[in-house]
Length: 230
Image (cartoon, rainbow, N blue to C red; front, side, top):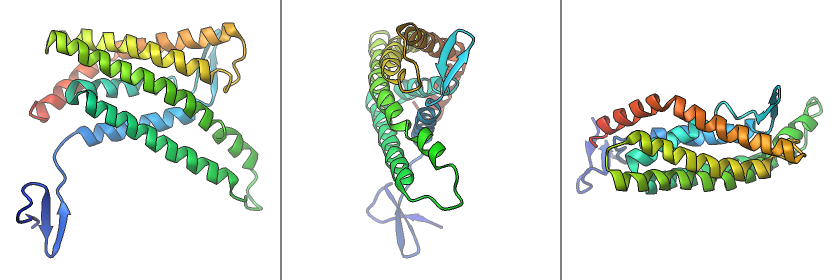
C-alpha cells in the first residue's frame, strides 16, 4: 500500500523504495483538460467555411461555445488566476500543435501518400486561424473572466445568472469581433457584407448557446462547488 513519505506532509507518497508526488483531489485538472481539448479542436475545425442559406459561419460553430461554458465554471469556482492559467495552457498546447503541423507538412512524403497537397492546404491554414483565435480568445476569455469575477465581487454569491449572462455578452463580443476580422479572409470571406454577417452570426450564436445551456452550467458549478468543499 502506498504511504505518505516521511516529512513530505500530503505532497508525496511512497511505494516500496519509490516516492511520488501525490495527486491532490480536485476537478480543476479535468476541467482544464476539457478546456484545452475544446480549444485545439475548435481551431482546426474553424478552417472550414460553412453556410446555412444566408448565414455564414465556420466549422467550429457547434463546439466553440463550450469553451466559454467551461471558462465560466473555472472562473466561478476557482477564480480569475486559475482561469488565466487554463487560458495560457490552452495557448501553449495550440502552439505545440501548430509547430507539429509545420514539421509534418515539411517532412518528405512517402511514394504511396497521395494527399500531401490536401494535408498541407488544410493544416497550413491552422496557424492563421490560430493567430485569429489567440487574439480573439485572449481578449474574450480575459474579458469574460474579468467581468464574471467583478460582478461576483459586487453581488457575492447571489445572482449567478447575472454573472454568467453578463460575462458571456462581454467576452463573446470581444472574442468574436477580433477573431472574425482576422479569420474571415483566411476561410475565403472577402466582402465587407459577408464579414459583418460572419461576425454578427458568430456573436449571436455563441451567446444564444451559452444562455440556452445556462441551466447545465448552473448544475455543473453547483456540483463542482459541492464536491470541492467550497
